[in-house]
Image 1 (cartoon, helix red, strand yellow):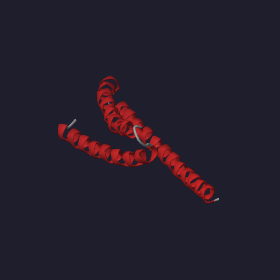
Image 2 (cartoon, one colour):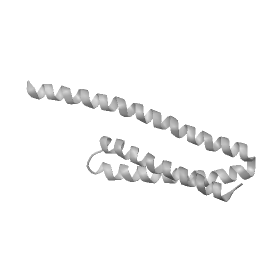
Image 3 (cartoon, rainbow, N blue to C red):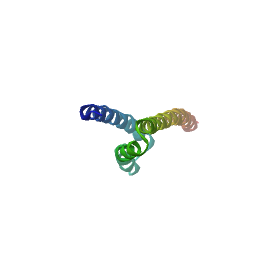
Image 4 (cartoon, one colour):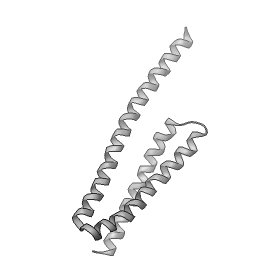
Length: 113
């Protein structure tokens, strides 16, 4: 029940959000081109901040209604869901890179023929 501890937690989560945006920007710049890229970049900057806002608005209500244990479980579930989505995105990106390399080699062989 410490305000200082809450501020320290917000700083830690804020740093994590910024690091996540850097990683998402690297993946997004490889996936999108031309006019699609600015929209995709704006979405990856906006959505994590929107998620933080939703979490910041929902958790106090859950805490007041159900107590600390439930609020902690909901927050942990949100973090776990985020981790699962990052793993899925990494797998998709890995196979996308392999597919792009296969297509590049296929086109290179066709041009040389």
